Amino acid sequence: MTQPRQRARSDQDKEVRKTALLTAARELAGERGVREVTLTEVTTRVGLHPSALRRYFESREELLLELAEQGWAGWRTHLLALIDGRRLSADEVADVVSRSLDELPLFCDLQTHVGLSLEGAVRLERARQYKTAASEAFDAMTAALVETGAGLDTEGARTVLTAAMSCAAYLFQLSRPSPTLRQLYEEVPRWAHSALRFREQLTTLLTAVARGARGDR
Image 1 (cartoon, helix red, strand yellow):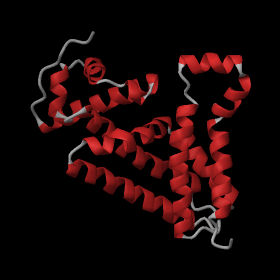
Image 2 (tube, rainbow, N blue to C red; image 1 turned 135 degrees about the horizontal axis):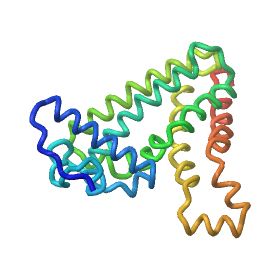
Image 3 (cartoon, rainbow, N blue to C red; image 1 turned 120 degrees about the horizontal axis):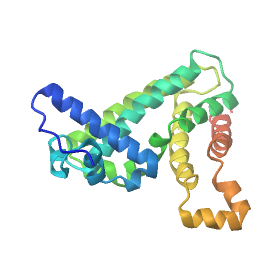
Image 4 (cartoon, rainbow, N blue to C red; image 1 turned 135 degrees about the vertical axis):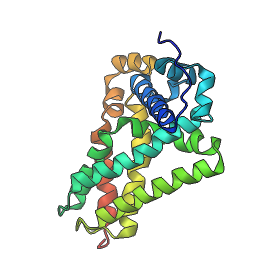
């Protein structure tokens, strides 16, 4: 076990410590899922006493919400890089959006928890900060989809992205089954076939949405 470190004193030290806490939470979430992340494990991993976390985050929910906020920036950057100014069909838009989320598993996992608990458990100003960052990323991605030439107007692009994050959150949880479900899927393989195909399922759903959301329908 890492020995507790001295209290961070300078602003730079505090920022380094805050980054370390976020990194630890990200690693733990990747290992066992967001729902299993605890403050004790996070602080232990960086060598802090659990009470010290309150100097950087008011709660577990605020810590995880910060990861979700970073996730929005990551999704925007990733999706825009995949589009890269190309002309795309509706089917290609679905594939690109699906790929962008498939490569961001932590963000998909966090989306389940944001609406259920994280947003409502923090102070108003912290929730406002999260919503502002998420909205800016969403708007940038919306504009990028409109510019692909796939026949999506602003409302259609918003529909595709809304479907993407909603479906990704649900399908991601299905694709990470508990030990009980893993055993069940071994006994009934056809259920696993439906549950474990995250990207394929997401692409199929988004293809239907993108086709239906085109302005020329």
